[in-house]
Each structure stands twice: as structure tokens, then as C-alpha cells.
Image (cartoon, rainbow over all chains, first blue to last red):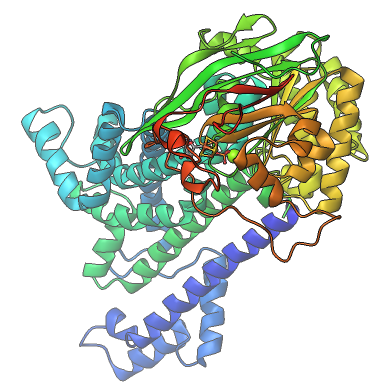
Length: 305
Length: 330
Ligand SMILES: Nc1ncnc2c1ncn2[C@@H]1O[C@H](COP(=O)(O)OP(=O)(O)O)[C@@H](O)[C@H]1O
Ligand code: SF4
Ligand SMILES: [Mg+2]
């Protein structure tokens, strides 16, 4: 178990390091950052002085070292647009994204897992068809379209919730549902097919032969095994949550990191964009690590590998 | 009806009469088990043999009331276990009987244990369901049965998960679960097919020992006549969902009366006979959704007659306690 967790932790660190390297290379490839900071009226002197301040006169490996050293201390430089530290801006926006991600994730689990189980247990019935319908929408409707449709019906037509922004407590419902639906659909399908396999297995037959009742068969023997595939694919689906947040936060004007990333992109605010991308990576890596811990908890074959 | 009994003196614990289990499929009604009858007495072992697909496992599932409904259904017949017909009873009542009066050992030791629960949990579960005893006694009882099936260092292995054990060990655990609540009947569906020869022999000996100790009745499903000779008192030979010959092991080996039994026996390699190749029976059994009106073996039978194709042969007595369903028997 410990060995497994240490391995996963190292993998998480390596992921972070790789992403930082990619960001660093991209920032250097995309041109001299002084073009962003300085305007047409700057002198050669300003140009050189800025180079020294930013460390651009040093060799690349040293520059990367400085970048990493700053990043570890939470220093990603200053945002061009907002003229204040990137970290401050990111910290301001992060809670909204974390809240949205957590609600969307909970929605996807609370909808996807029980529906997946019901669809498998009541295979071929109305329930199963309903599950298929939910899954179909989640997997085929693009989030921006789904978001606009939901906004149109529930906010504009019915006036049940605010159409955009982060105002009342119920502002989060539409963006969370939009963001979580894809993941809910993925969970539903994974749990359903895993459940069908498991219910057909020899160990379920043996458990029934022991006299275990149908309820316990489903809730104890089958459920735990049916959780394994969704956990295996969680890395991919959590990634989808991150990319989805860019679209969803933009559609619903949700003041989080996803929208911040888009704003930074259009403002050519590279330091801010870097900070947001690193933060997203950190969030992703942390979530994936938590999933790995859960995975090991559920499946002893991982724990005692 | 004529039944084949060799141990008339002992009590019948399981009596199956005219059991029919059919499946509704898109090809039609699959008559996987179609009118089988037999009695099982206390302490005896009945072998059920036959080629793959002849309905052995469906028989086992019917006796456990574990047929998937739909597509399957026990359409008629009775299964009297310990004086009670278990065909009409409710699922809840049946759950109380499974594991306590009638237990199961299934084929594949690699997949018959739940990968996410420890060995101890899985053995204790059966005991917990059927015996109203304190937690400590449940643990003790689980250890006791694990020792009974010769799991070395049982007290430390209870914490292990199935993937940490060898195939032979897992099959012993499955055996331990089977006997944990002292059932009257144990059904073993090809329990040693995937084990290697030495481990298989050990396992069979273990089953025999346990049986002697507790006067257990065993139904041993196999397609291996070698195992039948070692393990069984009586044999029922199944073909296309029916029992075509039934008798003591000696009757079946010395005086096989159904051409199918003869063919099966001819396919067994024996020490006293040199066989160039494993004899296998020519042809295929008829599809179970489209059985002929006459004898189901007619298309493969070396001594087929006109009568065989026209009418199904009723079960007839060959000798006392030995029956066969063949027109050849007069
Ligand atoms: N769930 C099912 N649905 C349809 N047909 C089935 C099902 N289970 C078993 N059968 C049919 O019953 C027949 C007997 O199968 P089985 O009892 O497993 O044979 P075996 O003697 O090899 O154990 C097979 O021909 C199979 O097609
Ligand atoms: S009834 Fe006829 S076809 Fe069937 S086994 Fe006997 S002899 Fe052969
Ligand atoms: Mg079988």
C-alpha cells in the first residue's frame, strides 16, 4: 500500500514537473516576454534592464531553475493586465472553480453511479432506457450547447435560477449540471457495464449459493467491484472536468479559473495564463492522487500489488 | 417410474422428480433439463456425467434455485430437500436454505471468490447468515472449517485476499465455504477441472474425508469417468437434458446398457488397454431447442433402429437399481 502510494505520489510530482517544463518552453518559444511588458516608447536601456530583472540574460536552464524556484514559492510573476501578482489573482478565483468542480463531481457521482446500478439490475426495462437517454445526452451534447439549452429553459423561460454569474446559492445549479453531466454519463455507462459483468460472475453465483440475499448481493458484493472501472477511468474523466470548466465558466460567466484562463488568453497575459495552467495541473494531480488512494482502498489487488 | 436405488436402507435427503428447466431464447425453447428424476441418500455420492452442454450445470443451478429468470424457468417437477419441495417456495425462504441445507462448490477457483473481500470475510459471511451465534464464535467456526480443508496457517491466511492464494488453495476455501454450515447436500460442479493432477487428487481425497466425517451427501458433476470411479457410489449419465442411464458405479462400468454410456466409457484412457488416440464420439448432440421426437442419440448411435427415430425410449430397468432409456434394453 505504502509503496503504491509513494509511486503514485512521485508520478504526480513528475506530471507537475513535465507540465512546468512544457509551459516554460512554450513561453520561450512564443517570443520575448519583454514585448508584452514594454510598449513602443521604451528605450533600449529599459529593454536591457527588464532583461536583467526577468533573468533573460541568463542561460535557459538557469531561467528554468528560477521559474521553478518561484513556482515552488507560489511566485509566478506579475499579471500584465491586472498589474499585481499572478498568485493573488489565482487565489481570488480558485474558490469559485473548486466549488463548481466539487458540486459537478458530486452531481456526476450521485446521478451516474445509482443510475448505472439500476440500469444494470433492471436491464432492458424503462429504467435502463432512461439511463441510456441520460448517458446519450451527456456524451453527445457539447457542453456549451447543453449549457445554453439549460440556461434557456430553466433561467430564461422558467426563471427558476439566475441565467449566469455567481449571485445566489442557486446560481451554481446550471453550471454544475452542465459540467457534471458528461462525467455522470461516463460513470453511468462504466458502472452499468461493470455491474452487468460482475452480476454474471462466478463469485456472485457462489455468494448467492451461500444464501446471501439479493439486496446484499447488489449493495455489497457487486457494488464494490463495479466501482473499480469508474475509478480506473477517473483520471480521464477528471481531466474532462478541467477542460469542461473552461467552456462552462465562460458560458455561465462563472468567476473562476476557467474563465480567468480564457480572459488571460485574450489579453495576451502570459504570466497569468501560466499561473492558471499550473494551478489546474495542481488541482488535477491532487484529485487524481485522491482517486488513487480510493482505488487502493476499494481494490485489494492494488493495495497488495 | 423406476428409480435406481442401491442403498435402500438409508434415508433419502434429496428427491428430484420429473424436473424440467427450460430457457426462452430467440431460437425457441431450450430444453436444457427435460424430465430428470433421481434420489440422493444420506452419505452417498451421485455422479452426474455427460458431454459439455448436456445440462449438468443447469441441473445444479435448478437444485440451488439459481436459474436466471428470465430467460430460464423451472417449468415442472419437484425437488424435495429434507422433506420440503423447494420449487414453489419464495426467494427469501430459498435464501435461508442455500448454504445451510444445500451448498455448492463451483468449477473455477480463480473466479469463484470475490476479489475485494478477504478469505476470512467470505467464509464468515455464510456462517453469519445461517447461524445466530456471537461474532467470536463465527470467527472460530471459520477458522475451524479452513483447518478442516487443510489451509496451512489458517489464522494468518484469513486476512489474505483471493489473489494472494494459489488455485488449489482457493478451491479449498470454496470447499470450506460449502461445508461451513454443515449442509446435508453438497453439489460439486466440476470442482477440479482446472486444477493439476496432484492437487486434484488431494482435493478429491479431502472431499471424501469430509464426507465420511459428516455423513454428507454429494452430487458430483463431471465429464471425467476416472473421477467417477474414484468418488461416486452411483452414476447418472446425462444426454441432451435427460438421464439416459442410471445405476451403481459397478453396473455402469461393468454392464453399460446405453450406447451413449458405452461410447463415453470407450473414450476413457485405461491402464489395461492401449489407446492410440482418445476416442471421441462422432457427431454432435442435437440442439436443445430442437430435439427430435425419438431418441436424442439416434443420429450418433451405432445400433440405431427405425423405432428409435419414431418414438422416445422410456426408462426401463436393466437390473435391480440399474435403468436405461434405450430401445435396445428389453
Ligand atoms: N442462461 C441461459 N440462457 C439460455 N440457454 C442456457 C442458459 N444457461 C444454459 N443454457 C443452455 O443449457 C444447456 C446446458 O448447459 P449446461 O447445463 O451449462 O451444460 P453442462 O452440461 O456443460 O454443464 C446449454 O445448451 C445452454 O445453451
Ligand atoms: S434408443 Fe436406439 S438410437 Fe437411442 S441409444 Fe438406444 S439404440 Fe441407440
Ligand atoms: Mg457445466
